[in-house]
Image (cartoon, rainbow, N blue to C red; front, top):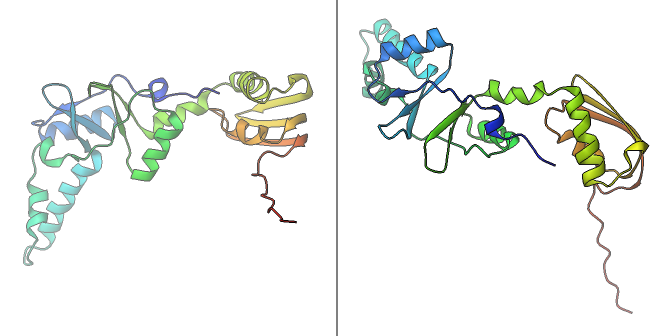
Length: 223
């Protein structure tokens, strides 16, 4: 069963900046282009960092905190944050990237595990080929019900399980799958949920083998 990759859903036309891009120009890009992150590239086109919209807001927060606490002592780090003026002073340098052949589900897992809001997509030479945002990941759920149904028949029922599709009725409405009929193995339900674009899956099926649980080991007895 094939899955959509990052290359299928990423934004290929990426707006980028350089290390010397000014704070004001960054702010203008975020406002006018309605984006949340900007990859920072070096002269060779490699990603050296990412500036997030929230990074600019932190500067405003620190400046406001300084104005409200003129009589108090501010930390050196706080003063440094308020003084930044360029992309290389704002950007996150430890950037998580993915190759274009990464499965969409794996990219979503990485985003959640590392709590990042974007993933630059780079090829085997390290060159930027696209960027992936949470909004891009949602494109998986724009697949038509017909495409989802066809894949369940071809890849899950016939291709993987070897089930006669005549014995199973597959109804897909707004990405929600309902299976009814007769199958040989119970694993048809988790396999159906793994199809790209499936929101949920329900089943009223009869099956001969429950292969969703590992077999119970029987202890050997010496006679």
